[in-house]
Length: 110
Image 1 (cartoon, rainbow, N blue to C red):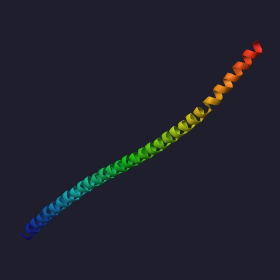
Image 2: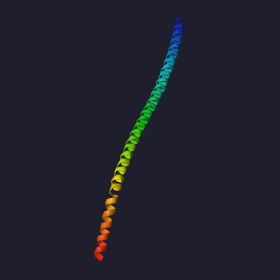
Image 3: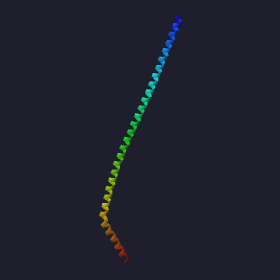
Image 4: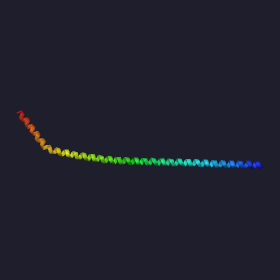
């Protein structure tokens, strides 16, 4: 009888050990799954942050480009106005010079 009692206790201990191992494996798998979920959340948050940063940099660059464009346009308009004014100031001189050349040519032919 004592041998059977020992065998029963051994079997109970083995069954208890199997339950402990099974519970530990399930808990380990749950921890692994939780860690994977957390890692995916971190990766997704990092991707979102990177995309937001990239979008912000693009908007900043666009604003800088637009400001530079406006500066160039304003400079071009100023230059055009300066050239137009200079040309208008010379119109009378050019007309007089042209008329003079025309008269000289007419006198040369007569």
